[in-house]
Image 1 (cartoon, one colour):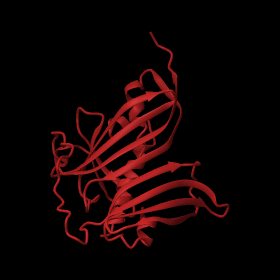
Image 2: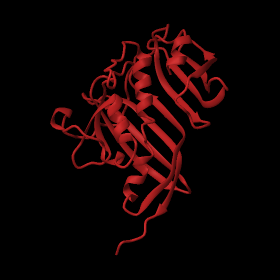
Image 3: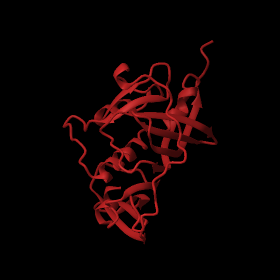
Length: 244
């Protein structure tokens, strides 16, 4: 997202859609990003992004990032919101204790979330959690650029989503392999602020044939829909022997 924003003349607009395919497992090494303009129109711009590990240029990720101009030149777009998913009725973040989302238990996400995110799960729901960016141990704040906050939401959209598909079966199945295949991020707000408290909701409509699908929704504290996310991945499990 940040790479596309760096070359896009439409970066002053809003990122509205990101589609990602993970081609190979990544390592913590230098990565080179190539950005190819596919379309640069008055209202929308689309870029293909390739991420390659250096020095061997091993392809890690292939993505497309699309920008939407906030106000078209002819001024016809009024920004009227016809409908949006309603935010669940939950206690405010101030009334929730710090901790990890129940659906993240037994995953790397529980520790990873606290590296860059403050999290306050909603009591009584394994799939609802208040989150906001805090920048890790260095407390690196996000800048004012829209692409930085969009990238933070992109990070959230890949934060061990697939473990939410396993949680209902955690008592009877253990993971043998879990990895992401592809995911999509759709931003509904022109200027989301990931540094503010946001309500994060997960659900999994499908898990079978060694694949799982997980969906996510994000709302601002005032109830505005900020983003929708979906991720598909490999989920290989084995049944745990009954202790009865």
